[in-house]
Structure formats: structure tokens, C-alpha cells
Image (cartoon, rainbow, N blue to C red; front, side, top):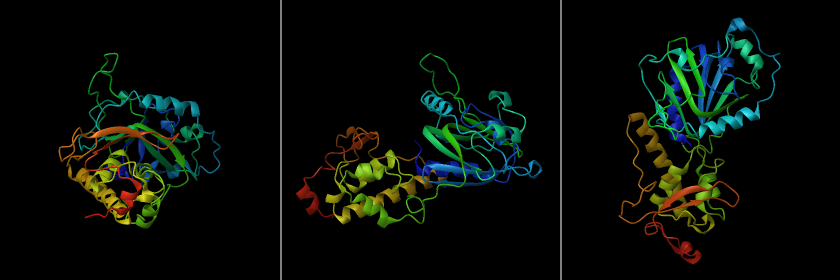
Amino acid sequence: MPEGPSVRKFHRLVSPFVGQQVVKTGGSSQKLTPASLQSLWLQDTQVHGKKLFLRFEPDEELGSLDNISLPESLEKGERKEEAQDQKQASGPSSQKTSQPPSQSLEHVAPSGDSGLEGLRGDAAVGAAERWLQVSFGMFGSIWVNEFSRAKKANKRGDWRDPIPRLVLYFGGGGFLAFYNCQMSWSSSPVVRPASDILSEKFDRRQALEALSQEQPVCYTLLDQRYFSGLGNIIKNEALYRAGIHPLSLGSLLSHQHLEALVDHVVEFSVDWLQGKFEGRQQHPQIYQKEQCPGGHRVMREAFGPPGGFQRLTWWCPQCQPRLSPDEQGQVQLS
């Protein structure tokens, strides 16, 4: 799943379209009717952790939507979309271009004629729910003014291009294509700046308290309640840079070790984001590597809380030794 830095880049790609009207729509989404956004105006965009929020308002000529009664979301459609995500994992995580659309509007079937008519048939969107929440799947992305192309043939040997979940064509002439993501309407963005690792309001004290729990630190780092926007890449890199074994119990680590871990989480995330804006490619030191920078063999195993999601973890036994409880309490950072 795209992590905080990637989603913030998506936010930058979307921002130039704020203030423009959606004039045509398309896409394969069944949970969210693409036609529901036709004729609406994109008024704002925000990013919080791993989620992107887009605020749409109706055209003044459409009048108020307060009295529109709408059905609930279709769970069947959502499950089908999640299954499709596993089949459409191709193309880079995002693309930015100033070139005009190079494909026909028929590349993705337009949906509906009237935005208001679409709203009446869409899932839970009304005057009080105009924020579109976008959650990106494992390979979610946003493309600007062009569509993602197949990089290789699928298992059947077909060179089929990925199908966008949603396409929004704007009055200014450009368009946005959303891939492998889930979308739903909400009354307001889910804002937790104290837990957002890229927010100026990130609460270090809260993060340190969470890490000091009696559980492996690799579990806590992926807890979005305390480290919103942090994903598997940042987890692996921060632990390696701090010299901490993934399964070290936070309650047994010194305050200095925990401080260093939080420092590396923030520093790596900020550098990754800056690199995305500057066009620099991030070069992980441990993630998906066979050797660490010191030349040691890297270990790989899936770790996660009992009954919870297991995530692949890379670590160096030499640089990140697993210490006994007595040793963990005595070790001080040099």
C-alpha cells in the first residue's frame, strides 16, 4: 500500500484541479457510481496518513441536495473491487505529466449524463457528505492526463492495460485516473495530525508511549493510530537505521533507543517525500535486500500480531541483534 510520502505526492498531483468542474466521468467502480461526480466542482483536497480526501460541491444551478435520499453502499461491489485490485498490479505508483490526453474518451466507458441523477443512485452522498475518501490498495496510484499501460503480459498472455477505478475529466482539459483504490463518501476528512508522521503536529510523546508497550516494536510501528502514514518500507528502514531487531519488545528498550527509532521514522519519511518532489529515487538500505550496507546477509520473515496481518520484514542479524531482556535494558546508544 502506498505510504505517507506517496499519498502526499498524489495530493500534489490532484491539487492543480481544485476549482475545476468535472465535465465527464468514467471508470469501473461499482461501489461508487462515477456519474455521481459529473457536473460537481472539486473544491478542496487534503491528505491524512495513507488516505486522500477530495471535497466536491454541486453546481449552483443544481440546487441543494439536502433532501436526496440514497441507498447504502453495496458490499458485493466493494468485495469485487478488492478482488480486481489483485489482478491490476501493474504500472508505477504515480505519473505526472503536462501533456494533453493522448487517449480517446472511449478508453474508459463514460457513465451517465446527469451528475444530479447519478447522485440519486449513488452510495451515501448528500449535502452533508461531499468528501470523497480515497484509500489506495497495495498498488494504488493516480495518473494525470494519461492512462497506465501494461508493463508485461498477464498469466493468460494478454497485454491488457489496467482498468482505472475512476476517471474524472475536468473543464480545464485535463483528467485524473485512479487505479486500485477504494472510495467512499464521508461528511469530513478523518483528521489525526498528532499521529501523522509527516505532519508538523506529529506527537512524539504519544509515539514514544506507544512504542514502549510490551510488544514487538515492528507491530507498533504499523499501528496507524500512532504512526499514520507509516508502512512496511519505512518500518524496515527505520528499524535498521536504529539498529533495533524487529521483534524487540518496546518495554525493554531504553528511552534512547526509542527516541532514535522515532527520529529515523521521521527523517526517512521526510527525505522520501522530498525525493519524490525532486524526482529522486529512494534507495532502501534493508528493504528487499539480500545484503545490508555492511555486507551482512539479510534475513526475511513475516511478522505480525497473533491473528493479525503478517508483513514481510527484512533485518540484519549482525546490525540488529536480538538481545536478551537483561541485555536490552543495559545497552546504551553510542
